[in-house]
Amino acid sequence: MDKKNDLGKSFNCTKCGACCQNIAHIAELRDCDKGNGVCKHLDLGTKECKIYANRPTICRVDEMFEKYFSSIYSKGAFYRLNAECCNILQEKLGIDESFRMKI
Image (cartoon, rainbow, N blue to C red; front, side, top):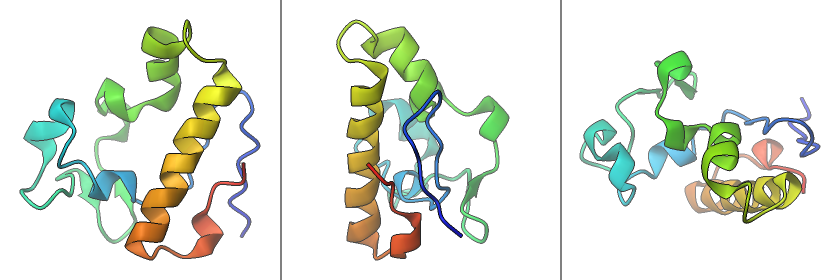
């Protein structure tokens, strides 16, 4: 299955779980950290968020763009930065390349 993200109208997460496994240094997610940098709301089997509909704002790329970054970046540039971070985390964790964001 191609997980391509065209960086279009919304940020389409490839649901690899990489960001959710690297929250140790994110102050806004301190209460979600299981103590090992992994979010307690991540289902390790499915790699999906167990509280997706109610996840913190920092976990919502589109909402973060609108609230905090729209005056700094274009939506495309913000998506590209997020996609680049996704790919770096995926590589670090050895996640299959099929989950890489196409930039």
